[in-house]
Length: 123
Image (tube, rainbow, N blue to C red; front, top):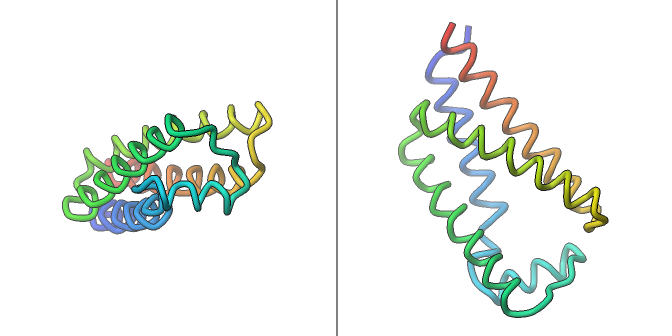
């Protein structure tokens, strides 16, 4: 049986993944570099602004979940991962860079891992 400690472990691990995956999107310069690295075209300042807002929020949310890996926060994050997965799939359907498929797989992995820990913990 998975205990609350498993929820905490999976929640903290997911938070660390998000921090590592998103830290490069915190500034316009690093976001631009990252977009070039993954082969995603940047369509100017508005796109970079949205990317840095996204990066900043995800990094802050990662720190909150790392510091307070409570089941409620992990559950909210799990719902967010499901939504992110839908948007990654939609972007891939629209012809976005195939690199997003890797991010989609990782979102699904972390979402399923966290959901499983949450569900089993509830008994």
